[in-house]
Image 1 (cartoon, rainbow, N blue to C red):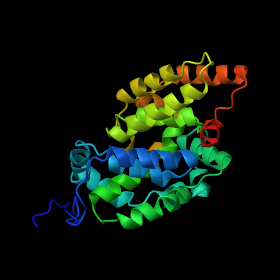
Image 2: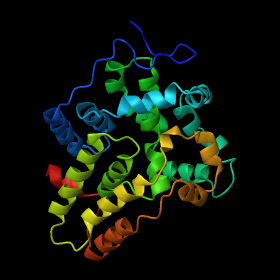
Image 3: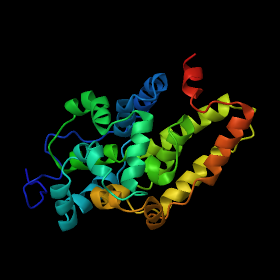
Image 4: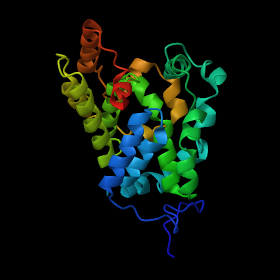
Length: 265
C-alpha cells in the first residue's frame, strides 16, 4: 500500500484503520449512555466516531506531515506525562497557564491519566500507531486546558459550550450534536428560568471562530505564558453570556450540575 508517511516513517493513516462511517443512530445511543454518567468520556469519543467530518483527515495531514508537526510530535509525543507532573508545572511563573491548570485539576480532582483510563477501552479497540491517533490523543488531552482558556466550568452547560467552541477547532458534526442536544436538554429542564441558555451556546461558537487551533500549539510554551496573554493571543474573550446564565441560576436556586441526575430520574 502506498502510504503517506512522515520523515520518521510514521504513517498518516494506518492501512488497517477502518474508514469512518456516518452513523447518527449510533450517536444517539451513545448520547443516551453519556446521560447516565457525564464523566464517561469514552462515550463522547464514540459520538465523534459516529459523526465523522470530511475535514478531519486533511487537518491531520496538514499538521502531522509538516516540519512543524513532526517537531511537535518529537518534543511532545505523549502529553499526560507532562500534564500530570504538577511539581514541574508549579515551577513556572505565577499567573501562568500552568498554575491555572494545576489549580483547576486539583480543585476538580482530575488527572490527565484519568482521562486516558476513561477512554482506554475505546482506544484499545481502535488503536493504530499513526498520525491520526497522535492527533486524536492531543484533542483528548487538551480538553481540560480548554476549560481554563475559555472560562467555561464543568457543569453540563459549560461542557456543551466547550463542544460548541471546539467545532471550529475540530469541525466534527459530533461537537454541534453534543452542544445543541445538551443545551436543549438543559433548556427543557429549566423551562421557567429566564437564563439565556441558548445564547450562551451561540456565544461559545462565536468565540471559537476566531481562535487558532489550540491542539496545534506547543503545550510547554503555552503553559509558561500568563493566562490572560494566552486568552488574548487566542482571541478568546470572557464568556459573558455563560456567566450571566450561572448568575441567574444561582438567583433562581438552580444547581447547574444537577441536570443529568434529573434526566436519569
